[in-house]
Image (cartoon, rainbow, N blue to C red; front, side, top):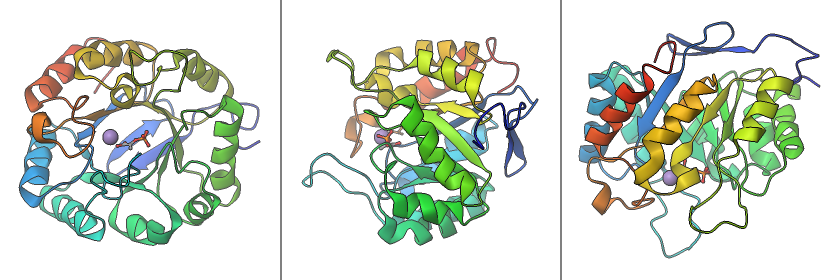
Length: 266
Ligand code: PEP
Ligand code: MN
């Protein structure tokens, strides 16, 4: 299997703009930004934060896979255009998610990393479309997905011709209800041992609350992972999605400082 260490012992190297993730680089990339792109003003502030910290990759969802049809569903193509504007104006790489196969080509066109969300992970239309491109794909683990199913989803992309797949652990569903999901660090250890794919961790969606994100981020980085995906909003109290877990910009800055001693480089 293409994702296995037997096929290739070394972790794959993936280029995101000028940044390299995986390989022998041993650095941890920090990706930040809001859960959803909400307005020009909001995403400009987010891009400003990323830029001011010397980071290079901005996240923001435009097609939100919400649990309720009555919740904010994202700005769609208008949001993608706002992200593309940030990419032009600030020289940032952008990552955004595909919700279903109907807009996969738009996302591919407007982003530098294509995020396949936890709920979209089984969508073969998306997996097959992402197999045909030459851009990095961040594949999130579904919250009820076994490690084997997760790696098999990655194989669809790899075997279809795209060798740039990054795995993302974002929490799985357990019996516990006090936290939103359970961050599966044992699963991360398994993936590091058995696969050659870079790994990014998303503690924001796993915990679901702001309070412990910084500590979790430190624990993740200490495991020698390749990157972190963290949600931050200029004013989390008015966020249109995932308001409880998004960090304020001050908290995001504090998180970056907190992980620096644990990481080789951020
Ligand atoms: C997100 O990144 O905002 C998101 C919806 O993530 P997930 O697919 O992991 O729930
Ligand atoms: Mn979110």
